[in-house]
Image 1: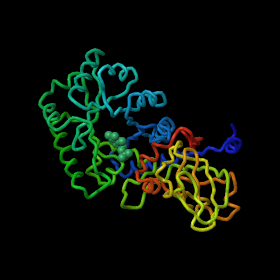
Image 2: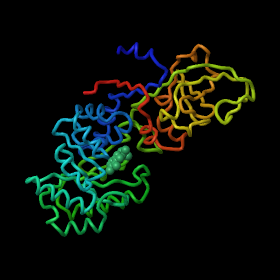
Image 3: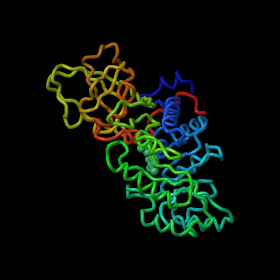
Image 4: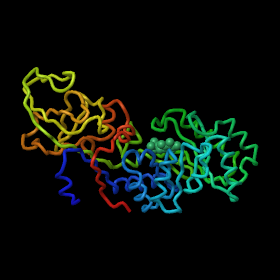
Length: 373
Ligand SMILES: *Cc1c(COP(=O)(O)O)cnc(C)c1O
């Protein structure tokens, strides 16, 4: 359908994803981490923005390592990536899934001795050596080999029967807080473990970890959120480009008198005679309900408050101070974008940019800007 026609139909919101900006962010992060290589974390459908489109574009930029959370996500990614790209499934190897990994040429992150054993068995059954990504837990206490398991592994070369370690990974707990002592503790633990284990490239830093300095870069960095424009250093200005613009349309305008209320629960009362615009987006679209009476949108770059609750399909905004010509039905309203950054809207909602992005539902019309590959 031609763009013009598509833009004209319907009342639903539009999610624009700027692949050029994602690519620029990836190049920026890679330059900061150099000489380390830079992967792309595209779990949860590329943080809600479309894993296939993003991975294809970053592959064209030269990215060769991709990380997802689930086997199913890896299978989908394999269909769009060249065979030389490596796809790592962070949630690991569950019993009975080795054949699926092998058939699709996916790498499970091996998260405990049991998983290393399963992979070794799979290598024996396949009659060839298998590459492996092994996750060392240095403080998250969530996934990966704990210190005792890693020490036992270091003493037991037979555990690697049939396995070629390709990458040792660990994951930072507090990278977005650069002065937190746990960063340096995890760095020390990771180095100590690596010194005892078979030599292979290593990877520690997520988005925020890239900003902790060269000690944290090792051979490969693994940004997710920063690729998509989420600020990796909450205390400082965001060095990355916004990648998302979410816009809704004004459906209707009305006047309310002083003391009238707007929306469910009568949670907003007009302090003056007001002009209210109703916009066709709501919590069923992933526009968080906690933004009721707190959120802000933008019309032509001017910020406008959300008044009343967020409904399933609608929000109401106070446009009393916006010229009437700029808030007619059909007028586009920016919900997330350059004038209303993802981190700010997330903070107003009481959450983080990661959750806001991954909540953006399938209901939006999606439009990709910039070439896919
Ligand atoms: C999600 C994830 C990342 C990416 O983290 P960001 O903070 O989004 O950059 C990296 N490594 C692992 C193990 C992850 O789970």
